[in-house]
Length: 359
Image 1 (tube, rainbow, N blue to C red):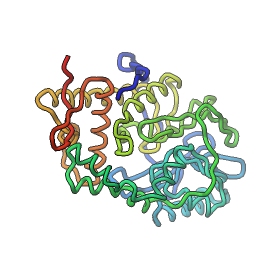
Image 2 (image 1 turned 60 degrees about the horizontal axis):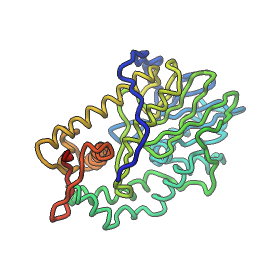
Image 3 (image 1 turned 180 degrees about the vertical axis):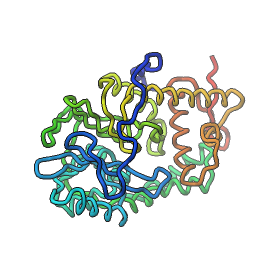
Image 4 (image 1 turned 45 degrees about the vertical axis):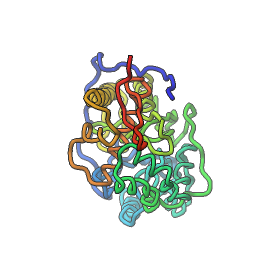
């Protein structure tokens, strides 16, 4: 099945402001940096290859509204306590804004809301996605999902690991509050003296919330656009024919088309930066190059998604990295399927491979 979507803006031909970093050293553990008047930046450690997540604190009357949380572990709880007894001493948390349902951004939402008696503000999709996984962590282990991964060439070991991702997720999040305030793209959110336009992006996470202050030309971008790395964009078994990469590239194009070039980007990882349009152009070109690698590889023979993983990820991968590499490779394949550059074939054993279409 294919679906028609608007074309992504071409940002590769124009010359835009280069990517630059107004602050080149991130805040130390337990410290904050003021990145704009009334907006503090702190960094929480993560036990992953991407070893940190940025959180932002926006002045809100006699306290601060927090944006994102870190994962649910003792170290992150202690990091929050250190912030509140250190640079935020004498201030309170007024509310919690969560950009999307990934554990490094929503993991401690339940604890923070209960501990400090504050409301949770997030998208409906983010709230429901977190609850869906948390309430049914074994759902991804269904035989139909294992069959999906094996049909695309994944090994039994890797398929088993991917099928248990729900349990892994559950260990990194606290139960959410029973109620939340819904953030909706196109509406506005007043925090202290600032009024933010609520934006949302797709691809990395559905209905990922971003906040844009037009008066200051400042965007809290979550994981939608990062300065030096690209966020993971994956196909998951619950939506096997989905086109998250198509949605992601369209979201990026819309972001660049709607925001001025001098916008300061406050991302969920890495450093704040200028150069949104240049960076969006680089990310779009990166994904096009990866699509070309896949098409070139398939010219020689039909290939499963698993066969194509080394084409995009030639380095050695541990099982955890393999699961994400597989799902991201699948996103590129599905984009090419939607563009009608590749088609699926199935052999007698039910194994799916992609080939070039016959003209």
